[in-house]
Image (cartoon, rainbow, N blue to C red; front, side):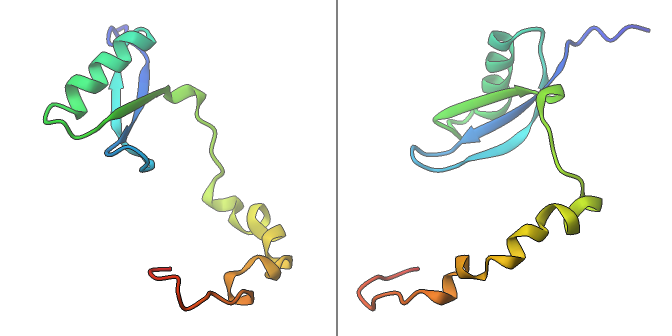
Length: 95
């Protein structure tokens, strides 16, 4: 039986201007315009966002949890990047 829903797209919503985009879920669509419309209709019915990203699921590349040690190891030898090496002035709040 052939799937008639179209490719799977991942949906990311920006709740307020300047905030990061957050993964909201996924939808099926045959093209990018349809994907945006389906995402809008599904995930922002109550004005939950100000912008939407849609990405075909097949275009997403990810590291795997099994690679965690070897993939992230190079960061361990750069301890100077940790914020504990910097003094934060008292005038700066909420950091």
